[in-house]
Image (cartoon, rainbow, N blue to C red; front, top):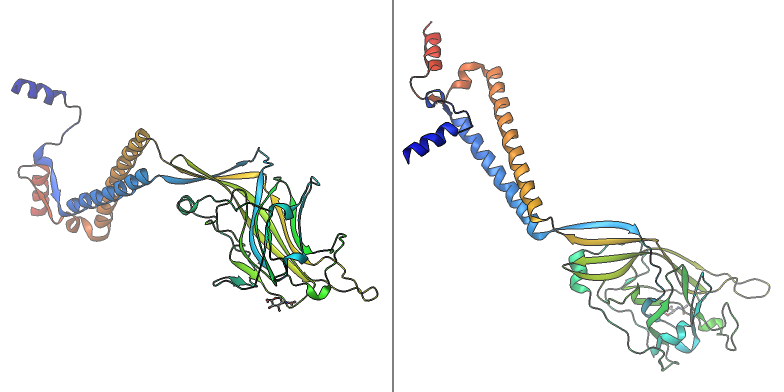
Amino acid sequence: MSSLSKRVKTFDAFPKVDPQHQVRSERGGLSTLLTYFFGLLILWVEVGGFIGGYVDRQFEVDRVVRSDLSINVDMIVAMPCEFIHTNVEDITRDRFLAGETLNFEGIHFFIPQNFKINNPNDFHETPDLDEVMQESLRAEFRQGGQRINEGAPACHIFGSIPVNQVKGDFRITGKGFGYSDRLHVPLAALNFTHVIQEFSYGEFFPFLNNPLDATGKVTEEKLQAYIYNAQVVPTLYEKLGLEVDTNQYSLTENHHVIKLDEISNRPQGVPGIYFRYEFEPIKLTIREKRIPFFQFVARLGTICGGLLVAAGYLFKLYEKLLVLLFGRKYAERGKEKKDGGILNQGILKMTDE
Ligand SMILES: *[C@@H]1O[C@H](CO)[C@@H](O)[C@H](O)[C@H]1NC(C)=O
């Protein structure tokens, strides 16, 4: 047994300092403590990061052009349903008769609580991954195409309109404005005051926030045009194998009042509410990622090694500084050597002289 331990000792590859030459110092102890402390701190942060994963964002070119996308609307316009005309037109010249898939329900106009009225809605934040995962309850509007109580003073418009994923325009105007209809709404009946509960592109996730949600506009003008320009970015959220495929948009607004032509007394434009949209040809993917276990271990090893080396250098630097600033005597104070070292004797001699 003892011969084995002897053999192992001779096999020891690391050079050792004889105990009589070793030096203990208070500062050395403190620096070791500090190194341990930072080491533990880094370990804690790293392990936390390993367990919790990290959020990775990537843009890539969106190769799929979907033709089964929808616009989800839930809003109130301060005008009777019977006067309202809706349609969608896009650059492929496809027309979607929004009126056939949306629901129109006559109600009294009101502004729900906490709605932002007449604010520019040009602020948008990409929703958080966890938030999206919690709130991504998918929903569908009930069967479209219903028309109820069309004479009531305001109109609740809700439903989904299937569209192509290309640039287009969803508009709400008065009947007979900008196109010919047997009914031409009298100017005096126009009121494009509106509140929006929901306006989104893609699948309908009612709890996800969009820039237009819970906003509205109130106007005293009959010939008002509200123009919302949306830049839509397809966004995919991924966590723990779950995927939520959404679209977020940023918004610019542009509103004006249309003038009457002085001679013909006709409006020089079409009043209404316009939702113009354009899809970005990129896709944003936000996913939670985890580094593989071995990579994590290797990383920890690298960090710890680096920390030790850096701590060693720092300590040496500190000692050198002390010597430079206060002289060798001060720097060696508090050091305690085991007896019998050659160096020790040397120093004793030096101090004797
Ligand atoms: C439109 O309706 C809203 C709400 O009832 C009202 O405050 C506004 O003055 C009306 N505007 C016009 C042009 O009649």
